[in-house]
Length: 141
Image: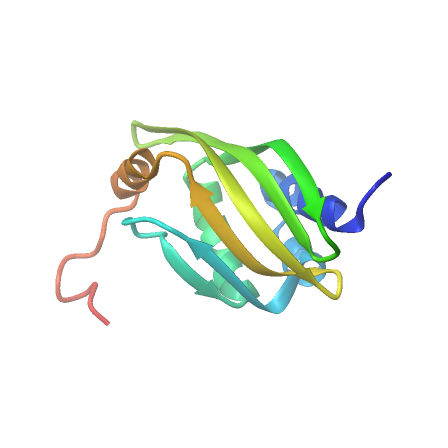
C-alpha cells in the first residue's frame, strides 16, 4: 500500500535529479524547513528555510551529484527514513557514498531533515576539492 510521505520523498529525489527546484520549493518543502548535513566542507551545516536548502541543492546539481534511492520506508505517521547513493564527478574529484536520511513530515511537506553520512572523510574531501573558499578576509562574515 502506498504511503503519501514515502511518495513525497521519492518525488523530491525525482525533481532533484532533473533539476526541478521550483516544484521542490513550492510543493515539497515547508517554508520553515530545517536541513542538517554533517561535515567539514563548504556545504556542510544547518540550512534554515526552503530557500537555503534549494541553494544547497543547486550547488549539488552544479557539482554533478545524482542521488539514487536504495531503500525507503515510513516510520509512524510523520517520519520517513531512506538510504541513498550520492554520486558524481567534478573538477577531477569523485563521490560515491551511501547515506541515510531521516525526514519529519508536517502537513504534507518536508519540515525537518537529518542526513547521516557513511564515509564522512570521502564526502569532505570531495566537496573541499570541488568548492574553493574565498581568500581571507572575503570569506569571513
